[in-house]
Amino acid sequence: MRMRILLYTFCLFALLSCDSSTPETENSEFPSLKEAAPFPIGVAIKSSHTSSSQRGELIGYVFDSITAEYEMKMDATYPSSNSFNWNGSDAIVNFANNKNSQVHGHALVWYQSMPSWVNSFTGTDAEFEAKVQDYIETAMQRYSGKTVSWDVINEAFEDGGTGNLRQYAFRERMGDDYIAKLFQMARAADPTALLFYNDYGMTYDSVKRQAMLDMVADFQSRGIPIDGIGLQMHLTTNTNNQQISDLITQVAATGLKVHLSEIDIRINEDGSLNSPTGARLEQQNQKLVSMVNVFRSIPLDQQFAITFWGLSDPDSWLINFWGNPEWGLLFDQNFRPKPVYCGFYAALGGTETCTAG
Ligand code: XIL
Image (cartoon, rainbow, N blue to C red; front, side):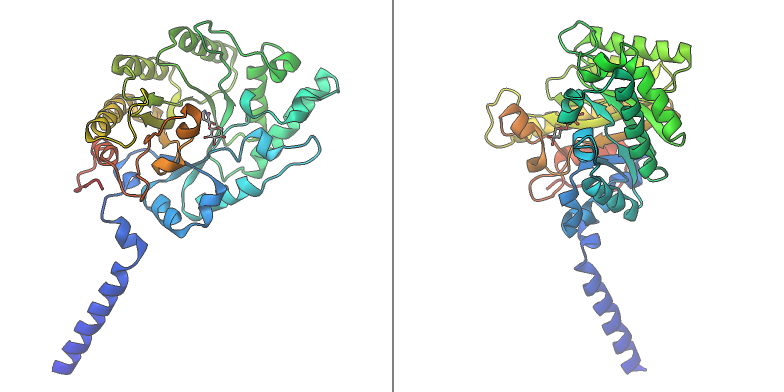
């Protein structure tokens, strides 16, 4: 009997000690966001991340929505006019599906990710449009049932307070109503996918914001399919809270789903920091919490998802884009949660202990 108890004790100890060395247990040192949120929590990833077990464990533990950072854009998937390349996007979609994570497709059309063949296309406008239709069908049908949603078009309005549409090949070839045509093509290609318009700069550029809202109202009055609006939310600690609140409230008033689709929060806009300070990290936390509180106040069925534009600080596009050191994301360079992670967790309604670092 005594021997048996000893044996049980040994087995239990062996089990526990074995368990404590698994990444799952390591991760459970801090609580998971997806468990706390009533809507999906997303992260943008690169296909190269899918082979790292450390990242994979962490992403699977924390998030339940995946966006491709660039490998589902047109220049990546349709590099030449007669061939598609699905390597990167397949890897990301398969990874997400294996993690029981939803996939948000990003982005079918973006003026910044035009393959060169688009600009040098020598066929007629009708042939161009047919090619676009075939592209949208091919991409969306490949991932039908594996992606819940797509950004049909990204950043169609120009900056600078004009509210004008950007001028580039798609608008030149398909006319001023090209965005409506893209949404119709997307709906026909995969009726199961939710269709989003995605853009940035809608906090500070009220003319651009109004132009987007006018476009949505026009689509709704004409019966052009659109299900949601993605607000990228590349913010800084200086972004005005009232503008954030007004934006989310006005966009929700359309009745469409709202996706905070590409969050990062710069703490070094003035370039003065070489390492993050506690004070700035706390401002970053407050900025996110204030935005999440507004998001949670819109009707639940319009709270589509909240997505971060990368996993850990050094991954971020911000560093090259702005040329300053930046720490804009939820995890630090050691994949440890930052103050903004724990603040976000609590703002989602999480009640477990969360300690940064
Ligand atoms: C960026 C990626 O982060 C980069 O890796 C890529 O080289 C260029 O695109 N708005 C968007 C995103 O909608 O697609 C952009 O992503 C960042 C700005």
